[in-house]
Image (tube, rainbow, N blue to C red; front, top):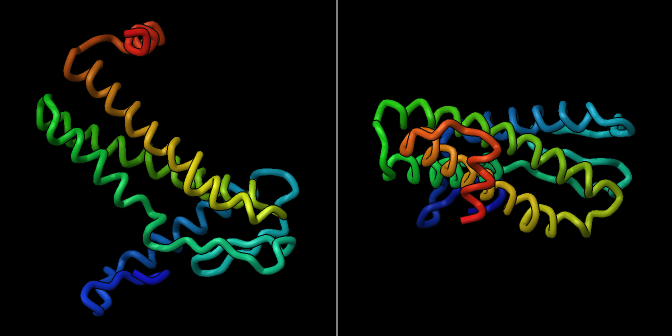
Length: 165
C-alpha cells in the first residue's frame, strides 16, 4: 500500500472506482470547508486539499480515507447480530449513509483545524476524529439493538438508561 494505490504481492490491485470515490470525497469535503468563514483560500486538486498558509502542505484523500474498513465493520456487526435479515439490509444502508456523511465532515474538520498548524493533523486524524468515527459505529449498534432487536421506542431516556447500566 503506497499512497493512492493498493498493492498485493508487489502488484497493484486498486479497484478502478477508488479514485472516483476519493475525488468525490475531496470535493464534498471542500464544499463543507467553504461553508465556514475565512476558508475561501482553500486549494483543491484531484484528491488533495490545502491552504496556502500551510506552505504547500496538503492533505491527500486516498483510498484509506473513504471509510471502507469502518463501513465493513459496521455491516459485519449488524449482519452477525440478532435481528430480521430484511431490516438488516436497510439498516446497513442507512448506517453507511451516516458514516459517509460523518467521513466528509471528518476530513473537512481535519483540514480546517490544521490550517496554519499542520502539527495538529496526526492528533486529529489518528486520534479524536477516528475515535468519534468508532463511537458513531457503536451508537448505530446501540440503536439497532434497542429499536430493532429489543423493539424499544427510542428516546433520550432509553439512551440514558442504557449508559447507566
